[in-house]
Length: 233
Image 1 (cartoon, helix red, strand yellow):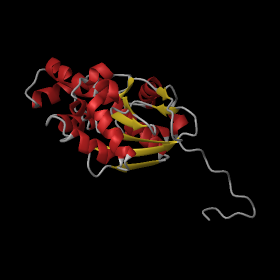
Image 2: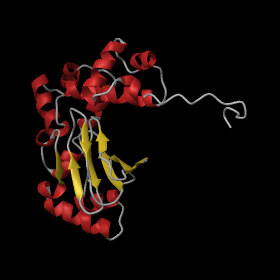
Image 3: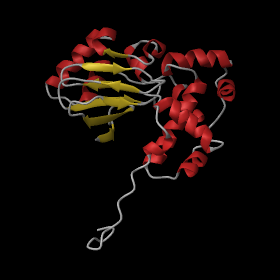
Image 4: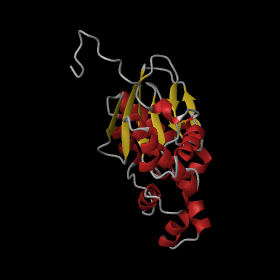
């Protein structure tokens, strides 16, 4: 399992060894392109957990684009792809064909996408909006900063993120909480450090988005060292 920032795209390149089992995906505000060894699958923005089964190699590679980036590359509204998994060839056949040919010729997936798509940049308002939502700025204040009404911001957001800014804020905060939990942070400490009013609020958001409880994401405790073992060895 690897996650590496792309050198050519506003995205993260990832790799998973699936050995014939479905890949579990939970909402994170992003959209992915996934290479299964033969073709490219497009994963739209999620509002609920998904289980994706892919064929081909037992190692699956993908690109997780930063929030709001991929719809501009595909020239399609993210709203049309929310909770969808479709072949890229159904959305942008010429892009899918170019990426497939390039990858099969030996190019890295992100290099192939960058070469086929040309300029990859979201609208200028997207990145500051995401930063503001992560910082806990209310949607109405973000809209005012951009010189927009709240409904205007909502329409723009659904086009590039797949849902409105308030829902995106929930997804982004839950994602930060999951990162903390996976790093071993205690449950109550996690809720406090990512801005939840209390643990029960975090529990509801994570349960709704992942189908699992927050405790499920904390690393398993290591077994105590035996008499012939040294801890930390």
